[in-house]
Length: 177
Ligand code: NDP
Ligand code: ZN
Image (cartoon, rainbow, N blue to C red; front, side, top):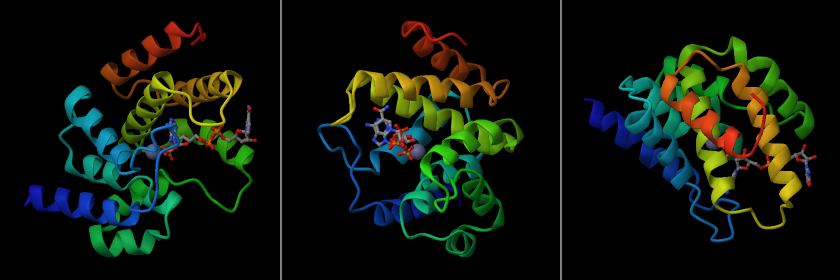
């Protein structure tokens, strides 16, 4: 049953992210982000593929908590584990290299991973547009937008609605796309 599968993911993700907060000054609970990414996919992008929505709910568990891909495979199966794996940076690499690899790897991601990546970037850029994280300069926010635009370049042709919303954000900041 789809509803059971979705709540299983939301519950798993909430437990894994329970001690984390977003970087905004209000220190919003971290779980707002994966739920918001899943909501962009269902509400704005018109996505009904359950595996994509489940992967969206789980997308930061491996990268940002003690969760392993094996654990995701056991709980949710091969397909979702495969998508989450594609969405997880290799934390053994230095930050700058991880950011460079996101740009390089974006075009060869699977269509399902590309959908979650677009929704993830849209959510994070809207968050940055809303308020600057504590300790971030305007230059750092600008650099983040420019980097995200490069990643998104490799994800184009995946979803009209999300790409149009992202383009609006870039246009408002005069970032050439
Ligand atoms: P981080 O990767 O440290 O932070 C951005 C990430 O934080 C997002 O991708 C998002 O990831 C998550 N996040 C949590 N809360 C928010 C929020 N409110 N709004 C948006 N994103 C949020 O930042 P950078 O991308 O800047 O990466 C660090 C790099 O910046 C390094 O290479 C470092 O060398 C450099 N740096 C630059 C500085 C500068 O002033 N230019 C200063 C210091 C470092 P998720 O989807 O996973 O939650
Ligand atoms: Zn994310």
